Image (tube, rainbow, N blue to C red; front, side, top):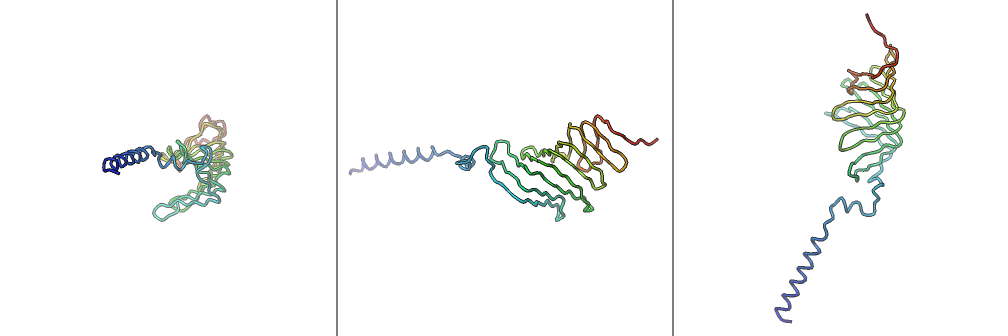
Length: 184
């Protein structure tokens, strides 16, 4: 073969290789999705006992039978189909408890949607019951527009809606229908 023919072959092979290289444009996320339905979770975790710490002190402990990880979606979330129990510890290591039949945590918005027999028992034995409650992790704010029952040692307050910070220092039942003790 002559040098011209070898150069032509070299250029053809190079052009073909470069074309092949640039045509393989799949991102890592697309490669991860191969063989996986969009409706399938990315992962499944069972018997969860997750502890959150701050400066070595446990601030929260999440327990659940199963978590489904849908981080492969455009709007990622984690789903707890079998419910959750969450223990929250204050600075004095006193415990508040959150229980729900179902929970979903949205990663992009830091919003937690608790559903079904939601019960929060605070450090000072106040209790909130509702069928659905949202928790905004960024703002540390609890809210719902569903019927609620909020009980303290003295009062049982029923209403349609609830707003509060996470420490319940400014809890407000909306559209109150229950009995409230008023001091003169």
